[in-house]
Image (cartoon, rainbow, N blue to C red; front, top):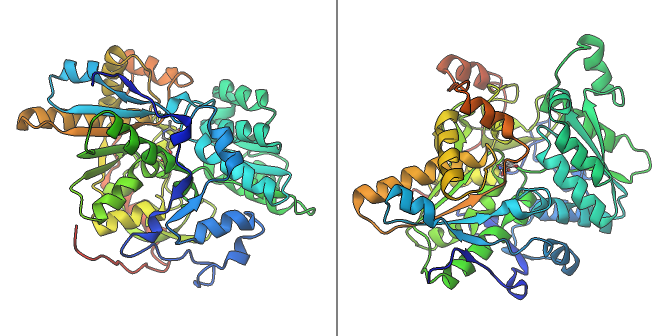
Length: 463
Ligand SMILES: *Cc1c(COP(=O)(O)O)cnc(C)c1O
């Protein structure tokens, strides 16, 4: 076998999503409402359609992928598995490095893998319009694409500073027929309240979430719902097509399996999508190292406590059991915008608590150096988020070289960076600095959670 790309036939695409909640020895604790009691599915009904809420709370191991959803996913799936031969050679490593190229989707990242089913289930439920928020624009563009194909209206609240500075992702949303408005806006009470106090605010993801939720709930016709691009259980579920395809492709490449699995993690979805089918093998006894990777500026998994915290800055969402830097935490303005989130998916967090995953953190200049080496060997220009996974891959490949071990390393190339070249410009000009989180700022962030309920730490001690 000396293939560079390993293709899977469309007929061999996964027909079910894999739900890790069925196999974790201790599944995640339930989200809590303002009164400290578990949130019921009915309480979420104004925000999400019931068919997605059912997936959110499901503990069924396999959930069928509807044929129509599969039909749309076929526009870019199965994504190719690549062997990074040129990087292997440059590093002189005995490791074999494989990656899933999720940059081949229409929006350029893994995010359409969940945007499409989320739009489809909303449509099935009779919903006509979806709202969401977006930071740099990756999620907003993925949802606008999905709504165009499924036939839904799409309204995206984009953080004002990105709206002004990054017009291209907004133009992608508009090309797909979506509406993109800068947040804070005068269209919601939450937005108007912020504008009254701070007319020149650059906005924040927290404010944008508040606006998108309000815009969905306030529609008296009941035909509007809200969507989230990461963190929630059903989002992790939808992304598991990545890992299921990868397993089949590794076999086609002549490999028995993988020794090391790596993905960058902001809310956790692209990492989970690749890793969870392998976490199942690890629970069943397989010997696999699994590394979610984050920035040192936003060290949720490596330094923050496992706590109950809100998903949004304003504290409107239920309390989720997760690693969190505190809902008011504002990370340094690093270029990997998709990794600047204070929390982490409850499913990923519980797998960390169990010891099934080993989180890592890197400085942004290390990540850009890795992305440059990648571009100059493998060719593709990586999203700044993806560069964190590449930094970990290079470290593992160098370790395999020192140990003289023929490891199989598999990682998720979550998206391309063609809309994010300003970060490369700054790195190449020598203008980027590392901004690891200080102990004082960590303590300040965590302090906002001190009066919230504390989750029980449940682990078997097996890993
Ligand atoms: C949004 C994004 C991420 C981070 O989100 P996750 O839910 O953690 O996957 C990573 N890579 C790319 C390219 C993204 O667009």
